[in-house]
Image (cartoon, rainbow, N blue to C red; front, side):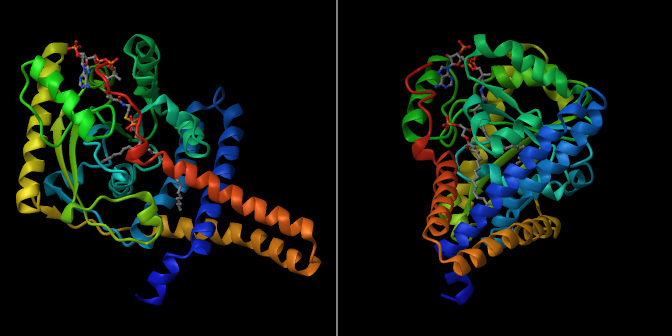
Length: 372
Ligand SMILES: CCCCC/C=C\C/C=C\CCCCCCCC(=O)SCCNC(=O)CCNC(=O)[C@H](O)C(C)(C)COP(=O)(O)OP(=O)(O)OC[C@H]1O[C@@H](n2cnc3c(N)ncnc32)[C@H](O)[C@@H]1OP(=O)(O)O
Ligand SMILES: CCCCCCCCCCCCCCCCCC(=O)OC[C@@H](O)COP(=O)(O)O
Protein backbone atom coordinates (compact mmCIF):
# COMPACT_ATOMS: atom_id res chain seq x y z
CA UNK A 1 0.00 0.00 0.00
CA UNK A 2 1.41 3.41 -0.99
CA UNK A 3 1.71 6.32 1.40
CA UNK A 4 -1.15 8.23 -0.24
CA UNK A 5 -3.47 5.24 0.00
CA UNK A 6 -2.44 4.76 3.64
CA UNK A 7 -3.17 8.42 4.38
CA UNK A 8 -6.64 8.07 2.87
CA UNK A 9 -7.46 5.48 5.49
CA UNK A 10 -6.42 7.65 8.45
CA UNK A 11 -8.99 8.98 10.90
CA UNK A 12 -7.36 12.43 10.97
CA UNK A 13 -7.90 12.83 7.21
CA UNK A 14 -11.51 11.76 7.60
CA UNK A 15 -11.97 14.23 10.41
CA UNK A 16 -10.62 17.06 8.26
CA UNK A 17 -12.89 16.05 5.36
CA UNK A 18 -15.94 15.84 7.62
CA UNK A 19 -15.10 19.11 9.35
CA UNK A 20 -14.80 20.86 5.95
CA UNK A 21 -18.07 19.38 4.73
CA UNK A 22 -20.02 20.18 7.88
CA UNK A 23 -18.75 23.71 8.43
CA UNK A 24 -18.93 24.71 4.76
CA UNK A 25 -22.40 23.16 4.69
CA UNK A 26 -23.56 25.21 7.64
CA UNK A 27 -22.13 28.34 6.02
CA UNK A 28 -23.97 27.49 2.79
CA UNK A 29 -27.17 27.03 4.82
CA UNK A 30 -26.59 30.41 6.45
CA UNK A 31 -26.05 32.10 3.08
CA UNK A 32 -29.21 30.40 1.83
CA UNK A 33 -31.14 31.88 4.73
CA UNK A 34 -29.71 35.28 3.76
CA UNK A 35 -31.37 34.92 0.32
CA UNK A 36 -34.81 34.78 1.96
CA UNK A 37 -35.50 38.55 1.74
CA UNK A 38 -34.62 38.37 -1.97
CA UNK A 39 -37.34 35.82 -2.83
CA UNK A 40 -40.29 38.26 -2.86
CA UNK A 41 -38.23 40.90 -4.71
CA UNK A 42 -36.45 38.82 -7.35
CA UNK A 43 -37.35 35.14 -7.06
CA UNK A 44 -35.39 34.05 -10.12
CA UNK A 45 -32.20 35.66 -8.86
CA UNK A 46 -32.68 34.05 -5.44
CA UNK A 47 -33.10 30.67 -7.14
CA UNK A 48 -29.97 31.15 -9.24
CA UNK A 49 -27.92 32.11 -6.18
CA UNK A 50 -29.22 29.01 -4.39
CA UNK A 51 -28.17 26.84 -7.33
CA UNK A 52 -24.63 28.19 -7.08
CA UNK A 53 -24.59 27.61 -3.33
CA UNK A 54 -26.00 24.13 -3.88
CA UNK A 55 -23.24 23.41 -6.37
CA UNK A 56 -20.62 24.60 -3.90
CA UNK A 57 -21.74 21.99 -1.36
CA UNK A 58 -22.87 19.09 -3.54
CA UNK A 59 -19.77 19.20 -5.73
CA UNK A 60 -17.62 18.50 -2.67
CA UNK A 61 -18.99 14.97 -2.57
CA UNK A 62 -18.41 14.64 -6.32
CA UNK A 63 -14.78 15.69 -5.74
CA UNK A 64 -14.57 13.16 -2.92
CA UNK A 65 -15.78 10.38 -5.22
CA UNK A 66 -13.77 11.32 -8.28
CA UNK A 67 -10.54 12.78 -6.90
CA UNK A 68 -10.24 11.28 -3.43
CA UNK A 69 -11.43 7.74 -4.07
CA UNK A 70 -10.46 7.86 -7.76
CA UNK A 71 -13.81 6.35 -8.78
CA UNK A 72 -14.64 7.06 -12.42
CA UNK A 73 -18.13 6.43 -13.72
CA UNK A 74 -18.16 4.88 -17.18
CA UNK A 75 -21.00 6.41 -19.18
CA UNK A 76 -22.87 4.47 -21.84
CA UNK A 77 -25.06 6.64 -24.02
CA UNK A 78 -25.84 7.61 -27.59
CA UNK A 79 -23.23 10.27 -28.53
CA UNK A 80 -25.94 12.16 -30.45
CA UNK A 81 -27.59 12.97 -27.11
CA UNK A 82 -24.35 14.30 -25.75
CA UNK A 83 -25.16 17.66 -27.40
CA UNK A 84 -28.55 17.86 -25.69
CA UNK A 85 -27.72 16.87 -22.11
CA UNK A 86 -27.63 19.88 -19.83
CA UNK A 87 -29.52 22.05 -22.31
CA UNK A 88 -32.99 20.80 -21.43
CA UNK A 89 -34.97 19.78 -18.36
CA UNK A 90 -35.44 16.06 -17.85
CA UNK A 91 -37.03 13.47 -15.57
CA UNK A 92 -34.42 10.89 -14.58
CA UNK A 93 -35.52 7.34 -13.72
CA UNK A 94 -32.77 5.48 -11.88
CA UNK A 95 -32.61 2.08 -10.16
CA UNK A 96 -32.17 2.21 -6.38
CA UNK A 97 -29.84 -0.65 -5.47
CA UNK A 98 -26.67 1.04 -4.24
CA UNK A 99 -25.66 3.19 -1.30
CA UNK A 100 -23.81 5.67 -3.50
CA UNK A 101 -26.19 5.75 -6.47
CA UNK A 102 -26.97 9.42 -5.77
CA UNK A 103 -23.23 10.21 -5.88
CA UNK A 104 -22.76 8.52 -9.26
CA UNK A 105 -25.82 10.41 -10.51
CA UNK A 106 -24.29 13.68 -9.32
CA UNK A 107 -21.13 13.07 -11.38
CA UNK A 108 -23.34 12.79 -14.46
CA UNK A 109 -25.09 16.07 -13.48
CA UNK A 110 -21.72 17.73 -12.95
CA UNK A 111 -20.53 16.80 -16.45
CA UNK A 112 -23.42 18.74 -17.97
CA UNK A 113 -23.61 21.74 -15.63
CA UNK A 114 -26.88 20.85 -13.90
CA UNK A 115 -25.50 19.74 -10.54
CA UNK A 116 -26.57 22.81 -8.56
CA UNK A 117 -30.13 22.73 -9.89
CA UNK A 118 -30.73 18.96 -9.79
CA UNK A 119 -33.76 17.79 -7.87
CA UNK A 120 -35.25 14.62 -6.59
CA UNK A 121 -38.50 13.18 -5.34
CA UNK A 122 -37.31 12.32 -1.86
CA UNK A 123 -38.79 10.87 1.29
CA UNK A 124 -39.73 13.54 3.83
CA UNK A 125 -37.23 12.25 6.43
CA UNK A 126 -34.34 13.48 4.25
CA UNK A 127 -35.55 17.09 4.52
CA UNK A 128 -34.58 17.05 8.23
CA UNK A 129 -30.98 16.01 7.54
CA UNK A 130 -28.74 18.85 8.75
CA UNK A 131 -26.82 20.63 5.99
CA UNK A 132 -27.93 18.50 3.02
CA UNK A 133 -31.65 18.38 3.81
CA UNK A 134 -31.75 22.07 4.73
CA UNK A 135 -29.93 22.93 1.49
CA UNK A 136 -32.45 20.89 -0.52
CA UNK A 137 -35.30 22.88 0.97
CA UNK A 138 -33.90 26.02 -0.70
CA UNK A 139 -33.33 24.14 -3.96
CA UNK A 140 -37.05 23.30 -4.06
CA UNK A 141 -36.56 19.58 -3.80
CA UNK A 142 -39.86 17.68 -3.72
CA UNK A 143 -40.44 15.79 -0.45
CA UNK A 144 -43.14 13.19 0.15
CA UNK A 145 -44.32 11.02 3.03
CA UNK A 146 -45.00 8.17 0.57
CA UNK A 147 -48.68 8.26 1.55
CA UNK A 148 -50.52 9.38 -1.52
CA UNK A 149 -53.57 10.90 0.15
CA UNK A 150 -51.37 13.08 2.35
CA UNK A 151 -48.86 13.91 -0.38
CA UNK A 152 -50.90 14.69 -3.44
CA UNK A 153 -51.57 18.40 -2.89
CA UNK A 154 -48.06 19.46 -1.92
CA UNK A 155 -46.53 17.12 -4.50
CA UNK A 156 -48.48 18.71 -7.36
CA UNK A 157 -47.82 22.21 -6.02
CA UNK A 158 -44.07 21.57 -5.74
CA UNK A 159 -43.98 20.31 -9.33
CA UNK A 160 -45.98 23.29 -10.57
CA UNK A 161 -43.49 25.61 -8.86
CA UNK A 162 -40.75 24.15 -11.05
CA UNK A 163 -42.46 25.25 -14.25
CA UNK A 164 -40.66 28.61 -14.29
CA UNK A 165 -37.36 27.41 -12.81
CA UNK A 166 -34.61 29.66 -14.21
CA UNK A 167 -31.92 26.96 -14.63
CA UNK A 168 -31.99 23.66 -16.49
CA UNK A 169 -32.67 20.88 -14.00
CA UNK A 170 -32.92 17.09 -13.86
CA UNK A 171 -35.60 15.65 -11.66
CA UNK A 172 -34.66 12.27 -10.23
CA UNK A 173 -37.28 9.63 -9.50
CA UNK A 174 -36.53 6.29 -7.90
CA UNK A 175 -39.82 4.70 -8.92
CA UNK A 176 -39.19 1.66 -6.68
CA UNK A 177 -39.77 4.09 -3.79
CA UNK A 178 -37.22 2.41 -1.51
CA UNK A 179 -33.88 0.63 -1.77
CA UNK A 180 -33.58 -2.93 -2.96
CA UNK A 181 -33.44 -5.65 -0.31
CA UNK A 182 -34.20 -9.33 -0.79
CA UNK A 183 -37.22 -9.10 1.51
CA UNK A 184 -38.70 -6.06 -0.28
CA UNK A 185 -38.01 -7.71 -3.61
CA UNK A 186 -39.89 -10.83 -2.65
CA UNK A 187 -42.87 -8.85 -1.41
CA UNK A 188 -43.02 -6.58 -4.43
CA UNK A 189 -42.87 -9.62 -6.74
CA UNK A 190 -45.92 -11.00 -4.93
CA UNK A 191 -47.65 -7.73 -5.85
CA UNK A 192 -46.43 -8.12 -9.44
CA UNK A 193 -47.87 -11.63 -9.55
CA UNK A 194 -51.24 -10.43 -8.23
CA UNK A 195 -51.29 -7.73 -10.88
CA UNK A 196 -50.38 -10.19 -13.62
CA UNK A 197 -47.10 -8.40 -14.33
CA UNK A 198 -43.88 -10.17 -15.32
CA UNK A 199 -41.44 -10.67 -12.45
CA UNK A 200 -38.32 -8.51 -12.23
CA UNK A 201 -35.05 -9.99 -11.05
CA UNK A 202 -32.97 -6.88 -10.36
CA UNK A 203 -35.60 -4.26 -9.45
CA UNK A 204 -38.49 -3.85 -7.07
CA UNK A 205 -41.81 -3.36 -8.77
CA UNK A 206 -42.02 0.35 -9.66
CA UNK A 207 -44.76 2.46 -8.11
CA UNK A 208 -46.28 4.34 -10.96
CA UNK A 209 -48.33 7.14 -9.43
CA UNK A 210 -45.41 9.50 -8.72
CA UNK A 211 -44.03 9.09 -12.23
CA UNK A 212 -47.41 9.76 -13.84
CA UNK A 213 -48.06 12.86 -11.72
CA UNK A 214 -44.55 14.19 -12.41
CA UNK A 215 -44.93 13.68 -16.16
CA UNK A 216 -48.37 15.30 -16.21
CA UNK A 217 -47.29 18.33 -14.22
CA UNK A 218 -43.99 18.84 -15.98
CA UNK A 219 -45.25 18.48 -19.55
CA UNK A 220 -44.11 21.55 -21.46
CA UNK A 221 -41.32 22.09 -18.88
CA UNK A 222 -39.42 18.85 -19.24
CA UNK A 223 -38.34 17.61 -22.67
CA UNK A 224 -37.42 13.99 -22.00
CA UNK A 225 -37.16 11.05 -19.65
CA UNK A 226 -33.61 9.83 -19.05
CA UNK A 227 -33.80 6.14 -18.34
CA UNK A 228 -30.66 5.51 -16.27
CA UNK A 229 -29.40 2.09 -15.25
CA UNK A 230 -26.49 1.82 -12.83
CA UNK A 231 -24.39 -1.16 -11.88
CA UNK A 232 -20.91 -1.88 -10.55
CA UNK A 233 -18.29 -4.20 -11.99
CA UNK A 234 -17.21 -7.34 -10.14
CA UNK A 235 -20.37 -7.31 -8.00
CA UNK A 236 -18.98 -4.43 -5.95
CA UNK A 237 -21.18 -3.24 -3.09
CA UNK A 238 -20.02 0.36 -2.71
CA UNK A 239 -20.48 2.39 0.46
CA UNK A 240 -19.96 6.04 1.35
CA UNK A 241 -17.56 4.97 4.11
CA UNK A 242 -15.57 3.10 1.46
CA UNK A 243 -15.39 6.27 -0.65
CA UNK A 244 -14.19 8.29 2.36
CA UNK A 245 -11.57 5.60 3.00
CA UNK A 246 -10.31 6.18 -0.55
CA UNK A 247 -11.62 2.92 -2.00
CA UNK A 248 -11.95 3.01 -5.78
CA UNK A 249 -15.15 1.59 -7.29
CA UNK A 250 -16.08 0.83 -10.90
CA UNK A 251 -19.59 2.09 -11.72
CA UNK A 252 -21.20 1.81 -15.16
CA UNK A 253 -24.12 4.08 -15.99
CA UNK A 254 -26.31 3.53 -19.04
CA UNK A 255 -28.43 6.53 -20.08
CA UNK A 256 -31.19 6.42 -22.68
CA UNK A 257 -32.99 9.61 -23.69
CA UNK A 258 -36.70 9.14 -24.36
CA UNK A 259 -38.66 12.17 -25.64
CA UNK A 260 -41.50 13.03 -23.28
CA UNK A 261 -44.03 12.92 -26.11
CA UNK A 262 -43.66 9.15 -26.21
CA UNK A 263 -44.89 8.82 -22.61
CA UNK A 264 -48.70 8.30 -22.64
CA UNK A 265 -50.91 10.90 -20.95
CA UNK A 266 -53.56 8.51 -19.68
CA UNK A 267 -52.73 7.19 -16.18
CA UNK A 268 -53.28 3.49 -16.93
CA UNK A 269 -51.29 3.69 -20.17
CA UNK A 270 -48.52 5.66 -18.48
CA UNK A 271 -48.40 3.03 -15.75
CA UNK A 272 -48.12 0.23 -18.29
CA UNK A 273 -45.41 2.22 -20.10
CA UNK A 274 -43.37 2.53 -16.88
CA UNK A 275 -43.75 -1.19 -16.10
CA UNK A 276 -42.46 -1.94 -19.61
CA UNK A 277 -39.53 0.42 -19.08
CA UNK A 278 -38.61 -1.44 -15.89
CA UNK A 279 -38.84 -4.77 -17.71
CA UNK A 280 -36.33 -3.40 -20.24
CA UNK A 281 -34.09 -2.07 -17.47
CA UNK A 282 -34.25 -5.47 -15.81
CA UNK A 283 -33.08 -7.09 -19.04
CA UNK A 284 -30.17 -4.61 -19.26
CA UNK A 285 -29.15 -5.60 -15.74
CA UNK A 286 -29.45 -9.28 -16.56
CA UNK A 287 -27.27 -8.83 -19.66
CA UNK A 288 -24.82 -6.79 -17.58
CA UNK A 289 -24.52 -9.62 -15.08
CA UNK A 290 -23.62 -11.96 -17.97
CA UNK A 291 -21.41 -9.69 -20.09
CA UNK A 292 -20.16 -6.98 -17.70
CA UNK A 293 -21.31 -4.16 -19.95
CA UNK A 294 -24.40 -2.27 -21.06
CA UNK A 295 -25.59 -1.90 -24.65
CA UNK A 296 -24.74 1.35 -26.34
CA UNK A 297 -21.40 3.02 -26.87
CA UNK A 298 -19.16 4.22 -24.07
CA UNK A 299 -18.63 7.97 -24.19
CA UNK A 300 -15.58 9.63 -22.74
CA UNK A 301 -16.64 12.32 -20.27
CA UNK A 302 -13.49 13.30 -18.40
CA UNK A 303 -13.89 14.81 -14.92
CA UNK A 304 -13.67 18.60 -14.85
CA UNK A 305 -11.51 20.62 -12.42
CA UNK A 306 -14.22 22.77 -10.79
CA UNK A 307 -15.45 20.33 -8.18
CA UNK A 308 -11.86 19.84 -7.02
CA UNK A 309 -11.03 23.56 -7.07
CA UNK A 310 -14.15 24.33 -5.04
CA UNK A 311 -13.30 21.57 -2.52
CA UNK A 312 -9.69 22.69 -2.10
CA UNK A 313 -10.87 26.30 -1.75
CA UNK A 314 -13.29 25.44 1.07
CA UNK A 315 -10.75 23.18 2.80
CA UNK A 316 -8.04 25.86 2.80
CA UNK A 317 -10.49 28.52 3.98
CA UNK A 318 -11.73 26.39 6.86
CA UNK A 319 -8.44 24.81 7.89
CA UNK A 320 -6.95 28.21 8.68
CA UNK A 321 -9.22 28.95 11.69
CA UNK A 322 -8.74 25.35 12.81
CA UNK A 323 -4.98 25.85 12.65
CA UNK A 324 -5.26 29.07 14.71
CA UNK A 325 -7.32 27.19 17.27
CA UNK A 326 -4.72 24.46 17.55
CA UNK A 327 -1.91 26.96 17.93
CA UNK A 328 -3.85 28.70 20.68
CA UNK A 329 -4.48 25.34 22.30
CA UNK A 330 -0.81 24.43 22.35
CA UNK A 331 0.22 27.88 23.59
CA UNK A 332 -2.37 28.10 26.32
CA UNK A 333 -1.94 24.59 27.64
CA UNK A 334 -5.44 25.04 29.05
CA UNK A 335 -7.33 21.87 29.94
CA UNK A 336 -10.61 23.63 29.23
CA UNK A 337 -9.61 24.54 25.65
CA UNK A 338 -8.31 21.02 25.16
CA UNK A 339 -11.60 19.52 26.33
CA UNK A 340 -13.57 21.94 24.11
CA UNK A 341 -11.49 20.89 21.09
CA UNK A 342 -11.95 17.18 21.80
CA UNK A 343 -15.71 17.74 22.25
CA UNK A 344 -15.90 19.65 18.96
CA UNK A 345 -14.02 16.97 17.02
CA UNK A 346 -16.19 14.25 18.55
CA UNK A 347 -19.35 16.15 17.65
CA UNK A 348 -18.18 16.55 14.03
CA UNK A 349 -17.26 12.89 13.83
CA UNK A 350 -20.49 11.58 15.38
CA UNK A 351 -22.66 14.02 13.39
CA UNK A 352 -21.21 13.07 10.03
CA UNK A 353 -21.19 9.36 10.89
CA UNK A 354 -24.91 9.64 11.63
CA UNK A 355 -25.49 11.35 8.27
CA UNK A 356 -23.53 8.65 6.48
CA UNK A 357 -25.77 6.15 8.24
CA UNK A 358 -28.71 7.54 6.27
CA UNK A 359 -27.16 6.17 3.09
CA UNK A 360 -26.77 2.63 4.46
CA UNK A 361 -29.15 0.04 3.08
CA UNK A 362 -29.07 -1.95 6.32
CA UNK A 363 -30.79 1.08 7.89
CA UNK A 364 -33.37 1.30 5.11
CA UNK A 365 -36.95 2.11 6.10
CA UNK A 366 -39.65 -0.54 6.39
CA UNK A 367 -41.48 1.00 3.43
CA UNK A 368 -42.70 -1.80 1.16
CA UNK A 369 -42.60 -4.31 4.06
CA UNK A 370 -45.26 -5.56 4.58
CA UNK A 371 -47.61 -4.73 1.70
CA UNK A 372 -48.70 -1.07 1.72
C1 LIG B 1 -28.17 9.40 -13.25
C2 LIG B 1 -28.61 10.79 -13.19
C3 LIG B 1 -29.00 11.20 -11.85
C4 LIG B 1 -29.51 12.54 -11.84
C5 LIG B 1 -29.62 12.99 -10.47
C6 LIG B 1 -30.46 14.13 -10.38
C7 LIG B 1 -30.75 14.67 -9.24
C8 LIG B 1 -30.22 14.16 -7.98
C9 LIG B 1 -30.61 15.04 -6.88
C10 LIG B 1 -30.51 14.65 -5.67
C11 LIG B 1 -30.13 13.30 -5.26
C12 LIG B 1 -30.63 13.04 -3.93
C13 LIG B 1 -30.71 11.61 -3.67
C14 LIG B 1 -31.74 11.34 -2.65
C15 LIG B 1 -32.55 10.11 -3.02
C16 LIG B 1 -33.77 10.00 -2.25
C17 LIG B 1 -34.71 9.06 -2.92
C18 LIG B 1 -35.89 8.72 -2.10
O1 LIG B 1 -36.15 9.29 -1.09
S1 LIG B 1 -36.83 7.42 -2.71
C19 LIG B 1 -38.32 7.58 -1.80
C20 LIG B 1 -39.25 8.60 -2.33
N1 LIG B 1 -39.60 8.41 -3.68
C21 LIG B 1 -40.64 7.66 -4.08
O2 LIG B 1 -41.31 7.01 -3.30
C22 LIG B 1 -40.93 7.60 -5.53
C23 LIG B 1 -41.69 6.39 -5.95
N2 LIG B 1 -43.01 6.32 -5.37
C24 LIG B 1 -44.13 6.77 -5.99
O3 LIG B 1 -43.98 7.33 -7.04
C25 LIG B 1 -45.48 6.52 -5.35
O4 LIG B 1 -46.38 6.37 -6.38
C26 LIG B 1 -45.96 7.64 -4.41
C27 LIG B 1 -46.05 8.96 -5.11
C28 LIG B 1 -44.99 7.75 -3.22
C29 LIG B 1 -47.36 7.26 -3.85
O5 LIG B 1 -47.24 5.98 -3.28
P1 LIG B 1 -48.46 5.20 -2.71
O6 LIG B 1 -47.97 3.89 -2.23
O7 LIG B 1 -49.17 6.01 -1.70
O8 LIG B 1 -49.43 5.06 -3.94
P2 LIG B 1 -49.24 4.19 -5.22
O9 LIG B 1 -50.47 4.35 -6.06
O10 LIG B 1 -48.00 4.48 -5.92
O11 LIG B 1 -49.14 2.73 -4.64
C30 LIG B 1 -50.25 1.95 -4.41
C31 LIG B 1 -50.12 0.81 -5.36
O12 LIG B 1 -48.89 0.14 -5.10
C32 LIG B 1 -49.16 -1.25 -4.96
N3 LIG B 1 -48.20 -1.83 -4.04
C33 LIG B 1 -48.37 -2.19 -2.79
N4 LIG B 1 -47.24 -2.68 -2.27
C34 LIG B 1 -46.34 -2.58 -3.24
C35 LIG B 1 -44.99 -2.92 -3.32
N5 LIG B 1 -44.32 -3.45 -2.29
N6 LIG B 1 -44.34 -2.70 -4.47
C36 LIG B 1 -44.98 -2.16 -5.53
N7 LIG B 1 -46.27 -1.82 -5.52
C37 LIG B 1 -46.93 -2.03 -4.37
C38 LIG B 1 -50.55 -1.33 -4.47
O13 LIG B 1 -51.08 -2.57 -4.83
C39 LIG B 1 -51.20 -0.17 -5.22
O14 LIG B 1 -51.49 -0.61 -6.50
P3 LIG B 1 -52.82 -0.12 -7.28
O15 LIG B 1 -52.78 1.35 -7.37
O16 LIG B 1 -52.74 -0.80 -8.61
O17 LIG B 1 -53.94 -0.61 -6.44
C1 LIG C 1 -16.35 16.33 0.96
C2 LIG C 1 -17.57 15.57 1.16
C3 LIG C 1 -17.52 14.88 2.44
C4 LIG C 1 -18.69 14.04 2.61
C5 LIG C 1 -18.75 13.60 3.99
C6 LIG C 1 -19.91 12.76 4.22
C7 LIG C 1 -21.11 13.57 4.37
C8 LIG C 1 -22.32 12.77 4.53
C9 LIG C 1 -23.19 13.06 3.39
C10 LIG C 1 -24.52 12.54 3.63
C11 LIG C 1 -25.27 12.65 2.37
C12 LIG C 1 -26.64 12.29 2.64
C13 LIG C 1 -27.35 12.15 1.36
C14 LIG C 1 -28.50 11.29 1.65
C15 LIG C 1 -28.98 10.67 0.44
C16 LIG C 1 -29.57 9.38 0.82
C17 LIG C 1 -30.32 8.89 -0.33
C18 LIG C 1 -31.00 7.65 -0.05
O1 LIG C 1 -30.51 6.67 -0.47
O2 LIG C 1 -32.19 7.73 0.60
C19 LIG C 1 -32.92 6.57 0.72
C20 LIG C 1 -34.28 6.73 0.08
O3 LIG C 1 -34.12 6.90 -1.27
C21 LIG C 1 -35.12 5.54 0.30
O4 LIG C 1 -35.08 5.26 1.61
P1 LIG C 1 -35.39 3.80 2.21
O5 LIG C 1 -36.88 3.58 2.11
O6 LIG C 1 -34.62 2.79 1.43
O7 LIG C 1 -34.96 3.91 3.63
